Image (cartoon, rainbow, N blue to C red; front, side, top):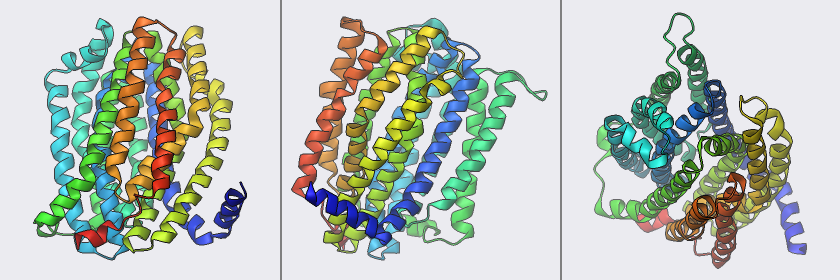
Amino acid sequence: MTQLIESTKEMFRDSRFLRKALIIACPVALQGMLNTLVNLVDTLMIGTLGATAIAAVGLANKVFFVFNLLIFGIVSGAGVLAAQFWGSGDVKSIRKVLGLSILMALGGSLFFVLPATLCPEAVMRIFTTSRSSIELGAGYLRIAAFTYPFIALTAVYVAMLRAVNKVVFPVISSCIAIALNIVMNYVLIFGKFGAPAMGVAGAAVATLMARALEVCLMLAYVYGKKLPLACGLSQLFGWSRIFVRKYFVTASPVIANEFMWGLGTTLYSLAYGRMGDEAVAAITIATTIQDLVVVLFQGLSAATAVILGNELGAGKLKRAEKYATQFFILQFMVTIAAAAVVVAIRWPVIKLYNITPEVANNVNLCILVFAAYMPAKMFNYINIVGVLRSGGDTNMCLFLDTSGVWCFGVPLAFLGALVWRLPIYVVYALVMVEEIYKAAAGYIRYRQKKWLKNLAAEIR
């Protein structure tokens, strides 16, 4: 306890650490917050069409969820290397990471675009047996899938910009894109200003327009400002065998991690989908509200990965270890505040939705379950996504996430939903048991210090 108190005092005295953490974490968290707010607005607007519409779009977006996790895996693994290269001043290698990441991300997007556009009804049937949800969701999914390549390209550039400590413009571009998204949602969902009333399909068109604009803004910024990422095709490609091997040794477990974890959590939705439209609507709304605070930890974990990666790449292992401890302290303090906020705002936000009292009460109870598990869940964000990955300990991250989902989450989801037939909030509580397991096993791995590695030096 004495050592913890001293570490906390040291953290508050370390203005260099706090300044750098806030400079990176705040824009990333703000960007996530803005994306969550547009999802909230989407859900509110679609919610006026009824619980089935909410369920249909929520289930259709599970395809995007898995796709997004694949892209997150690609850019997270790439970001680990890029941050360490930036710490060692190796811009040439950062550009090679960028080129390989673009190729991987755009190639990965095709695996999702094709089935979602060619046979969306079959994709929707994976998640639900409700005919009305399948029809509505398929119309949404067929259009929304065309946003995936734009999202992939944007994600790669955002991750690379974070690695070189350029985090402000991605927030600006997100603000512009989100403003367009909200306006076009209103116009196309409800048929305003002479536009046709497209319903849920209108939300997909609005998202496509916004994502296309965001890519254009990102590329204009990178090349207009002549940033380190601005280069010709020859500098993006032409990788050495050693470079490619190290990239995949670092990134492949992260990609597999996010994809396998995403596949597992998508199976949660399959279980929820068998519980009826009202259960799906409740968990969809609860997740949207929870995301308002989760983005804080996404920002903090991104800052952890970048800052520790910079220090490890520069060979400053002791400082990296000290900063890891300080990030855990910061995470715990933010968790307590965020839990209080999400509990306080739950009913004012729930009342914005046009839902039955039973659905509203289930949303309330799901949020309380989430708040109870927050200390473990948010520790895992910082430890797995930030600390362990920053030093390339990605195989252990893969093991922790996949074993948590597949050994605990998925079995408990199906037992609770289909065998025991428990209420949605109890099933959600069972699913979250995986966070306790990952927190305990992840802490043990952190204490072993196998993540303290200079990957940039290993490639040279």
